[in-house]
Length: 339
Ligand code: SF4
Image 1 (cartoon, rainbow, N blue to C red):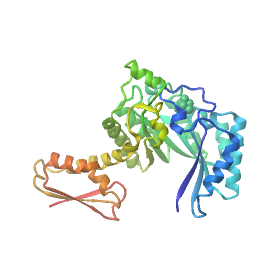
Image 2 (image 1 turned 135 degrees about the vertical axis):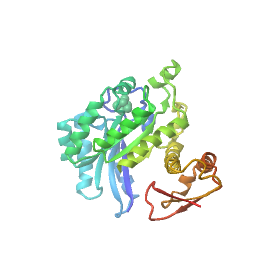
Image 3 (image 1 turned 30 degrees about the vertical axis):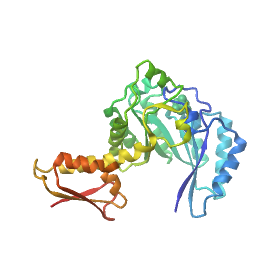
């Protein structure tokens, strides 16, 4: 069964906030919104699906529960109609933590919203302030509690490399996303878009954009937290699209197409290092390592251009490294035999 999201982008509607990194038009690839087009967009997307598919309608792009109330109810009623007719299986939407309250939560339940993606971004108030988010970590705590209590799944979205953020702030944010009951997560390394306050901060030397190496290592550290808590990470990095590379797209920061795969590969390398560090120094010199990984994990384990293999060879001076797959090994688990 395929899981399909039908994304409907509602960019910046109703959002009075000024997050320093935000250029919704570029992130969503959408410049406006017309209710009349939504139904035809849904129909077009549904025509490419089969009855076997698990289909969710997803209102992404802005702060859905902060838009004009009548417009929000109109969109939810449309989505609920599709759900009652059995043509979609669920509704999800993205919003800000401070746009969730008991009344909104009751509305979301009434219209059958199953998942809310919450832009938590950081659980450090200092980072939230420096990023102009306009909400606090306590707002995220409260929103998660309300949604989870109402039986609505929460996807915690967090960012890497926000102004004033450190690697340990990000690990703490990932830990708290898990503890707050989120069932899944997304990790977004900060990109600097043209025309944003963040770009001005770069010019004023108040913000240094992430290097790819930092983005990968810090995303991997957050991913490791989610893996260790069994919280699925459904995406690392923005969805690739032409709009990210326009002249007014990303002007500094990292390539989002590569960062997810590199972070996953970094997790594998870190896990191998942790396992090999248990051996006495020099015990591995000249040995052969057989690293058993799950299905489809070989290239992620070897790393891009075999960089993980090279790093293992350089650090432990082993003679040979073989990576084998075994269906009994799940996820990011590894087993290492030394010969
Ligand atoms: S809350 Fe921030 S990131 Fe979201 S649409 Fe508003 S300004 Fe942009």
